[in-house]
Each structure stands twice: as C-alpha cells, then as structure tokens.
Length: 322
Image (cartoon, rainbow, N blue to C red):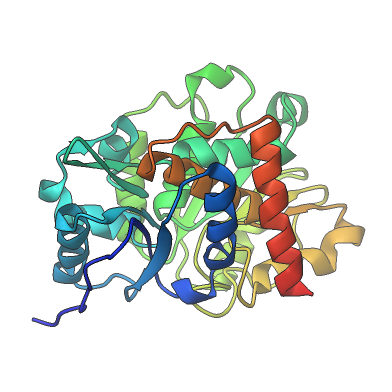
C-alpha cells in the first residue's frame, strides 16, 4: 500500500483535491478572497491524485481531512465520483444531490461530522444562466450536446431536466463519452428525474465520433466540453473538421491548460456566429459555494459582495495572463 504523506495542518486549512492543483488560479485568488471575507488566518493546500486513482488513496485523503483538527474541508474536482465511490461509508452526512448523483465536490465539517455535498447541480446552473438568457430553449427549440459523462456533465444535464423550467428546456439532449460504463451510470441517475425531452447516450471512443454528433444537432444548440481534455489531458473531444452549428453556444468547462476545444470554437466564432464561454464563471461559483460550506459562511450568488469577489478574482486572472 502506498501512502500520500499527508501532514497535519498547523492552521485552519482548506484543501483542493484535483490533478494539477498547483497551476490552478485558486492558489492566487484564495488568499485575497479569505482576506475580503474576513476568514482570519487560514490557507489552501492542493492534493494531487491520478485520474481514477486507487480507492485506498481516496480513503486516505478523506480519513485525513475527517480526523485532522485544522483540516476544515475540501473542494473536489475531477475525482468527485471516484472519491465518493471509494469512501462513502466515511461520510456522516451526504446532501440530496450527492446521494442522487453519487458524487461529492464539497467536504466540510459540522459539529464533528464529515459532510459531503454535490454543488455542481447548483453552480453549473448559475453559470449557464449567466450567459444563456431566460426563455432561450423555448424560443429557439435548440438541442444540447454535452461531451463527457463525469460529475459535471451529470450535474448540468440534471439542471436542464428540472421540472421548474417548464417548457424552457432543450428539444433534445445528447450525451457522449469515451467509455460506456459512465453513460450507463448517468442513465440510471436520469431515470430518477422527470425527463420531458428525448435523451441519447452515445458511446464515442474517438473525437471523430463526437464530430458525427455535432453534425446532427440544430443551429443555436448548446455544445459543452465537460471532459478534462484541454486541461487534465491533452487534445480536444472534437477534431474541428465538423463546424459547430451556426449560432451555437459553445461552453468549455475548462479555463486553463491548452484549451484546444475552446480555441477551435474561437477560430469559428465570427463566421459561425458562436457565443463562446470558458469555465471561469463556473470556477468562481463553484469555489465560493464550497468556501461557504467549509468556513460556515453565507456567500451570496449575486449582489454587491459577489460582484466584489468576482472583481478580486478577475484582477488575479489578468495579472497572471499579463
């Protein structure tokens, strides 16, 4: 059995469980946010795990956070499903979305209890509504195509299916993935929801297979890269040989890395009349939601304080890009 050599925290610490955490903008943004929110002496620390790591590694991380006094909690990316699958018995409480989706993106402590929560069904919806206007689906009759069947994809698709949207939902939803197992898991989760539009679960081992799906969807559709390709692994889930449908909204969940999918969209942006979004706002919503859990603070998703926190993050982003 290999060990991760996790050292006890010497001050209140929040963790970032990911793949290449040192390169994330949160390492620069968190200290400024913590200062603005008045969180006191605290720090953020990254824990890097391999894609689909050993179950024992996930258990070691969860056990460490659960028992170390100054370890307050964590945000989880990439490993949301694998971590919970390996350590579900170690959580004292799991929120409704975590139970439904079989994933956790937030680890926090409440009265000595370890609490897991899936925040993406909320934060992905907030990010989507920030660039897709109300009534869009009802007005356009467009499709949605989500590439990838991981936790973020399940979250976004579940948001689109909410009965509260009424008729303002996609005409059709296409979900693709390189492995068929994750597609079946998504199908099982969706079976517990009220679905009022057709859903196709497509096994697409190659980018060319995703190109074929692109060719099927109508103009104005939403196309999402919900894979780690372009950030955690190189390449793009599409080749670029097939254009994005005219007038489409193209959303790359990634905001850093080589971002090949995002660059393909930008290359076609003017001629294809595309609306293009990277993962930055999703990043902001996701982190603020989990920071609120970990430090037991109510952080609004809109209003003056939220705008101030967005401005702080944007300054750091521009500083790095400059």
